[in-house]
Image (cartoon, rainbow, N blue to C red; front, side):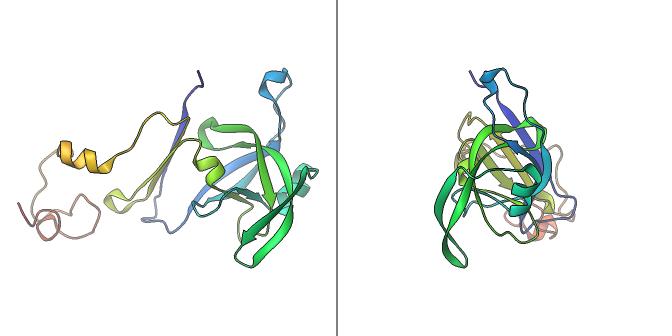
Amino acid sequence: MIECKAFNLTSNKGLLAALFTQCHIGIAFDPNSGQLPPQLVNFNALWDTGATGTVITSRVVDALGLKPTGQQRVFHADGESNVNTYHICLRLPNEVGFPIIKATEGKLNGFDVLIGMDIITQGDFSITNFQGKTSFSFRVPSIGHVDFVNEITSSTPARSSKVGRNNPCPCGSTKKYKFCCGQNH
């Protein structure tokens, strides 16, 4: 049985237009080989559900002294091209890790790693924007379905206390409760 690992990040600056996390990258390794894990270097990563796979910049390649493992044809905003591929070890926040993944080399603007669907589909990925703050959670492996429709039809969300009509709405809209979710109550 694989140990479940997860992390949650909540913004202190309101709603986010992009999801960034720190990640650590090293040379790929087999955790069953008895070898020590590789030294990892910290990089800034963007999570992108529109990207098929993980992408690293030449800065990551140079920092780790990575050697290409092959080439792959990729499609990107500037068209398509053949790029080098690398096997890397990727560690996300809270020790969520992947000892061997294939990454392609690419040009990224303002960050060095793009986390794509190759990582996201290995677990459960959730984004919420409750009370005007974006919260982003990820766990591996997947341990169940998230079903918002079932959640709202099977029970009313629990509230720790009654919301006053003139209080800010708990949904995070910045409106008063009486002009938002409390209109029909």
